[in-house]
Image (cartoon, rainbow, N blue to C red; front, side, top):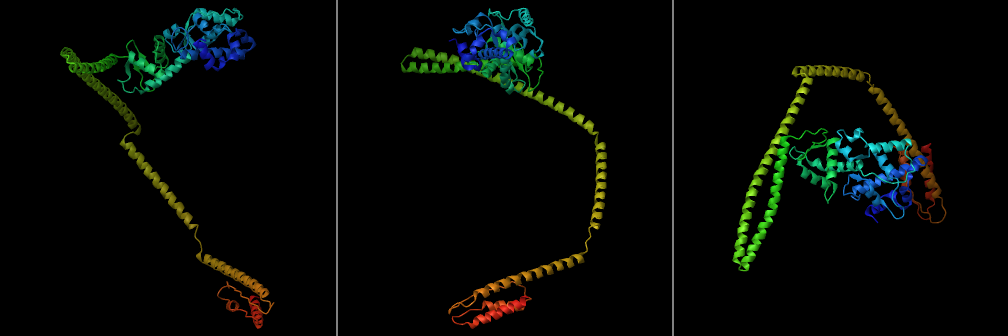
Length: 477
């Protein structure tokens, strides 16, 4: 099975086996009889081809942002069971009419953004799509042929642009935001995870989209200038930008040369040592001479690299100073505008004086209201004392009645308990007096009951107990 077919059948839900019969048929008839099925087939093909392109599986190269139509694409999609798809043409037509596919030539040459919807359709495609819409072209045609054309997949371009824009957001300083074309291309490949290299067409389309449609950079044949932050306007590339890129490129080349020279020097040193060990003086001398030559070149280029890096740091410092001056100038203008709104020191003093006067007036009104409230809230203290004494007397009387009731209940319980039943009667009871100190008689009765005890055979004690009970009842009533 072809890798493209395998990708569609395993990665795309709409290309499962039950759906293949409908997808490979000439489903143009469904446009009138089954609009929902027709739209589903169009969406399935368009989405599947876009995903296959992103995976680099379409015929005609490793482009991830382009779709090349024609015989090669039909052969790649051909199966033994269902043959070739018969309705890819309306899929392409519908995508073009909706702006989801744009011819490469129109995409690159158009001066306006793709989001303005002012795009030109190639004459043959416009005529074919128009005649199909008005019914002059038969929807029952089963030729299944496709014109050889290349189209930009807009969704893939937008997806790649989002990834690249996030990757280049780390470039903040003015010097760092100026890159060579080669350096920017490497960053794009890293951002998109492309290890085999980005195709020239993909890179060109992405540059156009980032510059014209997203307005996040400007570029020429040598330099890419990244916009700052969220700015939608990127300044034109100047001669200073070109000089900075040349300096950065020279520093990068010298660094690569030093990376090559260092292992070479180590290799010659090891070769000379091995020759000395083998008593081969001629080889040892030749290796040492070569080593010295490489070391000379290494040291000279190291010095040149150090000088260029020092110049680059000075440029960065100067750029930072320019940015600082620009910010301070802008801040000065802001402060000047704010000071003009304040109106000078005299206006400030007048405002403060008015504020103090108004606050003093508010305080005077508050004092008057507080005095009136205090005057209306005077209370006669003698009436409060009388009412408090009455409440205390009522509470004391209630307490006395409660204590007397409890004492009566306890004595009744004691009377029932102390009835003689045998020769040996022993009874002990304790009555706790909870009344006030004014009831002396009740206290005496309670103390007498506490001392009460019955010995064996002493029946007369019961009578004494009965007298105490009668006395307590008399006091209670």
